[in-house]
Structure formats: C-alpha cells, structure tokens
Amino acid sequence: MSTAPASDLDLCNAALTRCAAQTITSFDDGTTESLILAQNYGQVVADCLSESRWKFARSQRVLNRLSGEAPPPWSAVYQLPVDALEVEGVTVSGAPIEHERLADKLLCDATPDAEVVATILYRPATSAWPAQFREFVILRLCAVLFPALADKFQEGAAAAQAAALKGRRAALRSAQGGTPTNPFTYPIKGARRG
Image (cartoon, rainbow, N blue to C red; front, side, top):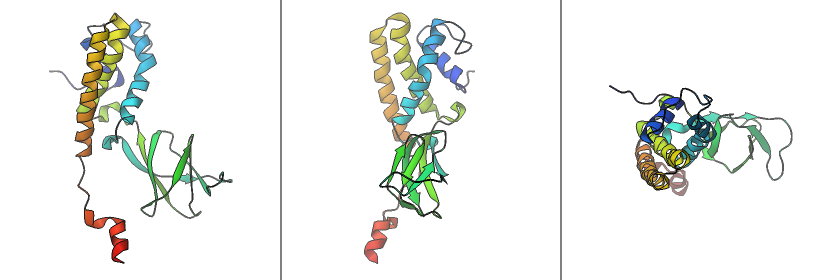
C-alpha cells in the first residue's frame, strides 16, 4: 500500500518514476535528476501556487507598522511576513483599503492605531497540500523532466497539457471548499439601505 507524497523529495520522486527516471535521495546527490530538480522545483511550486487563489495556501496576518516616513502618496509602511508570496488583499476593521507592495513592505494609508490585516498567499508545508494540488505539481514537474532528461518533447508537452487541466480542476475544487457568500451581507447593500 503506497502513501501520498508527504515531502518535497517524495513529490520529486513521484514525478521521476512517471518519467521512467531514477529516483533521488536528496537535491544535492550529484545526479542529473537532482541537479534539474534542485534548479526547478522551487520555481515550479511557486508558479503552481500563484496560478489560483488556493484556500489551503491563504492566510490572514496582522501586519507590524514600521517607523519612518512612507513614500508619497502613502502614509504608512508595514512589514510583510517573510513567507508571503503574494498579497491578495488588505483590510482595516474588515474594510478593504488600497495598498501597494514594495519588496517585503506594504504601503497603504492607515492611522497609527489601525490594525492592518493582509490576506497573503504563502507556501504551506508539503504534507498539508491537498491531493489534487500535489498531482498538479507532479504533472508540472513531469513537463520539466521529460524534455530535460530524455529529449521527450512530445511527452513533456502532453504532461504540461495534463497539468493545465489538473490545475483548473484543483482550483475549482479549492474554490468550492468554503461557505457560499450571502449576497445580503455585502457592505454596499448595507450602505444603500442606510
């Protein structure tokens, strides 16, 4: 009985076996396979995470305000968490505010006592990834490995196409994982009612 891949190495080895290649023991074991994966795995995962608003990879974090002046036209600078890949939204008291990301800083207009909350996309532990996302990453790795290891460009293109389909299905599944939004609770409706 096989188990689901629970580590980065497990995912890479799953992709390697699908490509009929030798598995690796680490990313620096000196083989061609490990060299290719060491150079590409992190980028493939970051790209897969960036393709959709995955619920398992979203987090809301209270940001720390930094001292000093903010560049115009902003009035405040906040430190983003080190694991933030993307900022999906920023709120103060539950209301969205305009913002701009500048490297690892967030620029916005907020009063000094405001609690600024950012919804970020981050990379959770590999063992926490849902099965469909793991499969998406494995297929994307196959699309990299087929042409790189064996000059199998058609197989690589087929794997890329299968990965695109799996990515769309996984994103749909992730989007269906929450409670539907009640249209009567939108802030604009409350404002219209007075």
